[in-house]
Length: 332
Image (cartoon, rainbow, N blue to C red):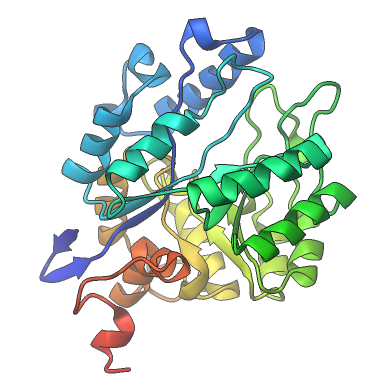
């Protein structure tokens, strides 16, 4: 929990990962390109004091994650959002078994989401059913630009994707997190386009579609979709560190999201281990829209509470301590 100026904030980091990008796990040059691109984001958008050595960035492990998030990072609960990337990494990029084991050890602190790829067709659909039972899945993370064989991405409205989403409905996996953000080398920019979110959100109204990275750099496209689809939510991973490097740009992002979506459909994410949550949380609590950006209303403490944790807690059924919920404080 984070406290500042007499105010308490329940923190849910809605997008974290354990990964292994060490040289012996890189299947090809693309594995190095991918983690190097991650590191460039980390190095270029972080305060100098928060920049890790490159070797530390390749692999963290569970012990460091627990320290960075919960001992030092103000986080009360975090949600794993793994990416497989088996075309680039021999044992996969996201360490699913390690992450799941950690979540089992700390169920009060960690929720494990898994991933699927519709290009595996029936075999993958059968695996999804087994995974939903084994992991007790509440959500999944989709990487629409991931490579498989000769394919360099898929669409949410592809026929096989619809079969997987129908299975998620049946299995109670209601929270569909989708990477729709900046391109990561060597993945293709257009494979992250947000347009296909519109159709699936309309056709699967009982699923939540959390658009990670809020569609950046396609923020306007995302907002026009999200304003008409009430089951579309914005994840702030990658957007958050602009609070340091480009604060006016961050003010524009958060201002637009609050205008189009309101504060109930925006979720804080550090995108650990690209960034650690501590400095992001502290900066966000202190952040205010510049006074000359008059098209945006000032950020309120209750809006910050919702974004920093209450929205994700509600979506995932995470218990919030007494006295910290905005509705409870308002006497609702």
